[in-house]
Image 1 (cartoon, helix red, strand yellow):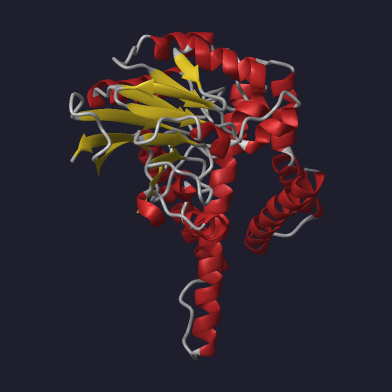
Image 2 (tube, one colour):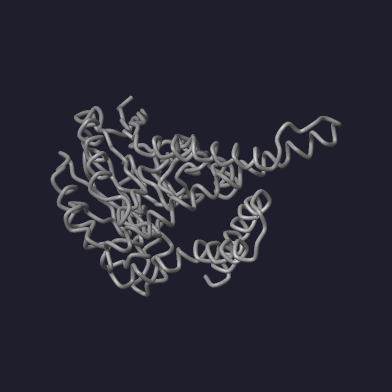
Length: 368
């Protein structure tokens, strides 16, 4: 964990150094400007650590304000550095090609700054508009008396100081529009700023889907505190499946813990093979698992996962594909099983999405 933090803050600090160096190039040099840029850069680099401490103290108002400042700036800085890097590469290529680069330092800085601001605005707009992704899966395993069952999957809401009442109302409106038989939540429903959640739980509890609501824990549930997260999910009307199965609507829902639960010291329930061995043969098995990791030899029909947010901000989607070797949406696996990876419904960190819109997946399982 310490090694990860060192690398993360080194990268984040380097981004500030790169961006502020661009600013230094076009402003009149002075000792006070240098000191000011250094002080602001250090403050913004370590602001997430300050946020973590404020959150631990349960200062809700201060945590919300610090979250917005820290994460909006983080999103803008990433977009600024990415755009500036593209401009620098284009400048170098123009020089090698013997062409004249049309922009001076000041004009380039202005263009990069405005373009990054425009991308930030678009990313904020995209993050607010939740889409219904409709998926149809056919099977011969549904009982003749059932015909079909619909599951609405929500994932990665990250409810907390930044995403709260207004955001959750949009999620609930989407679920009411979808009218599913079952609602499933595939982890990271609450975030590290998971205070003042009681009112949010009551909003979710009012949904009452006809065949129930089920959830599994993600890595952020352990960040908030596993007991606290479980209390929230159960208060919100979810049956939390921790190495357990539920027979509902002619299918079997099977849920396992995220591996991060092992760090809580409260036990982790990951023995999927043993669990599925207890499921009656011929059942249509829907495996709820936060991270989109497929265990070879595990007999399920459909795995529902989240975690990767579709990258959330382009081009991180390419990195998640390299890491997990999966893409968002529906994938046919060997042996006839299927994997559906949600792009997620909320945001983590910067409250923006760029070319990775949020979704509620409406999965219709039909009898062939």
